[in-house]
Length: 123
View: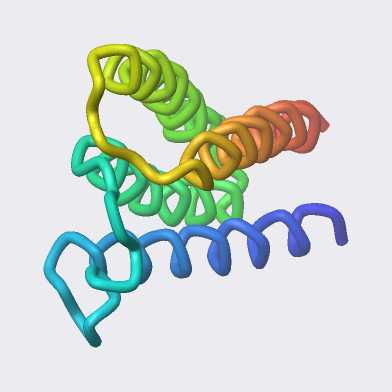
């Protein structure tokens, strides 16, 4: 049961992440204008992580031990991206204040998903 919930959450989280980030990157539905001063490398990192969440969901659904690696890669990307965001901000780059909280949230969720995945796949 826990595995099914994890897979569904990863599919939803990955799907929404992929849709929203690609909407900003490719300016679908006018979402780019609504985002204000978005930081392109942050959006690209989110897009890549969205794909990795979907890959992890597939692996977990198949009970594959490799399924933790896409989440590990996502976590590393997000940590490096967060550091890059603060460098960007300190250099006077434009950004939205909500980006800081959103990055912290996404990084924490990814770490939790990785921890749960490792626990579930060990059983």
